[in-house]
Amino acid sequence: MAAQRDKSGNDRRNAFDIIARHIGWFLSAFYIIWALLTGLLSYARIVTAESPPLTWPEIAIISIIAAAVSVGIAFPLAFGIVEGTRMVLAEFRKRLWREEAREEGRAEAIQERDRLWEAWLERREAAERDGQPFTEPPPSQNGTHNESQ
Image 1 (cartoon, rainbow, N blue to C red):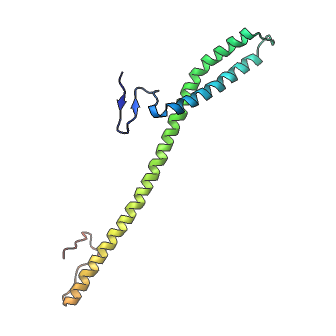
Image 2: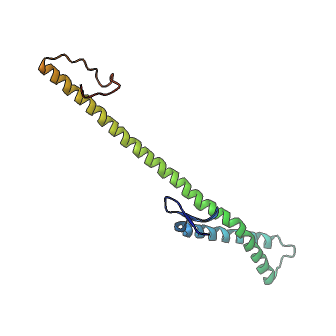
């Protein structure tokens, strides 16, 4: 099955497919979790053995079984950690950009407001200089912001 490419350039094939540029993070998390679980499960089984002095072949079999079992636990945990972290960081980045855009929008709105007031003031002063009556309402009262009067 060919990979599908979305707008951001991420290739995905199924639910547990890792983005290619995150595979290193996934493998690192997987191997660390897998090694810890294998060691923990092996240690717990060896310590709780019914006949305390276990032979090396018995310990090897216990470790192999623990390694096999821990793969099924480590894979979804590593996937959740890597993808969860990616999603949280993406949301944080999106909120940061949204706040920056909001601040930029506020600055543009202030500039637009100042431009409207300056244009209105120039029209009023021009009408006073020409001795004509000026009846245009100020921009704060004029909903249309009509500058052509």
